[in-house]
Image 1 (cartoon, rainbow, N blue to C red):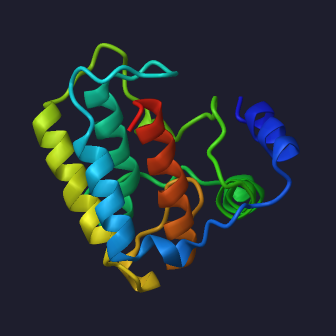
Image 2 (tube, rainbow, N blue to C red; image 1 turned 90 degrees about the vertical axis):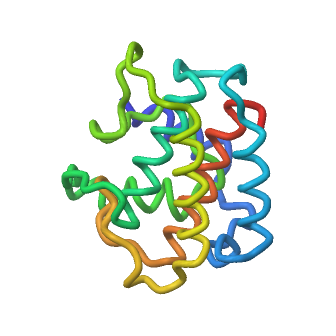
Length: 170
């Protein structure tokens, strides 16, 4: 389950190292993420996990796009996910731990593949919109964490997008 990876990550890093959600909403972050996403190719090799580049892009599109109304994902939240898990994963840790259980709607069957060019273009569009969505009212609830402030979204986007781009050496 997700408990062990969260516990290990928490013990390894008892406090957040300088990730401020408001830093996500900047031209510098938009340019950095755009360049990193553009460096991903269909041939990019993963460093861990099981997703291919097209699957990773689709996963990030679901995870990031749902918050901005691109996808309508069901509420899979429960008391622990909206409180303790959200606090640890969004407010405490500065890196996403490997081995987390995902919301069911974020999981991609290993045999399902997507149009790489389309997924990449959509992710760049979503990131652009996200970096310019400073008001909390711009965001929909997270499928597991529920309602979040724009600062929390900025932190979560920073760690989650970074995690998957590093997964493919971007």
